[in-house]
Image 1 (cartoon, one colour):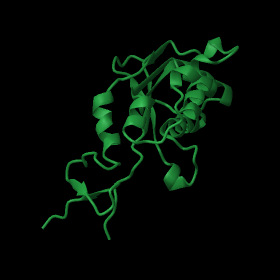
Image 2 (tube, one colour):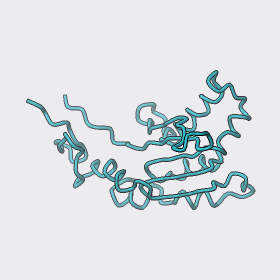
Image 3 (tube, one colour):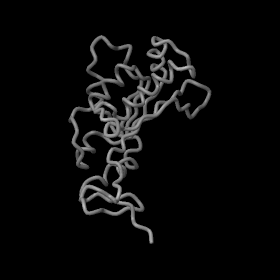
Image 4 (spheres, one colour):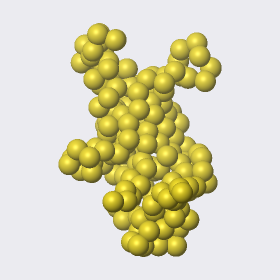
Length: 179
């Protein structure tokens, strides 16, 4: 039986740029896992934030919950697609120093993805009494062209990734059978 590639290539990394490493130090990652876990809230950003929180209070960092919450203000969140309203709210509540995303919600919609058509910058900017949680930097479109490839093949008309071809289902790509 053929196996279809995963359809949810949403990924996030959380990086610390305050340490001596000029490229930043990777703290944790997250990938969309809602289909695997049966949890609709496990988008890449939510998974990464949960992973960081777990790491911070573990023996690796041994932070108190309050220290864990405060640590986000020194971190940058990078995600390959603009955060949905749920994730944008979580980014805002976490108080990240920087929020950087690739493909915009508008571009995802153009590629055929169902989305809530509310931009993350609108969500982040709508906080009341939360100025201490404002990111210093909000930057969109970073790596957008490269990331569009990951999001474009899932629907009819999009090119499949290298080594794959469109299967019987118009929305899926299959690995090319090697002889």
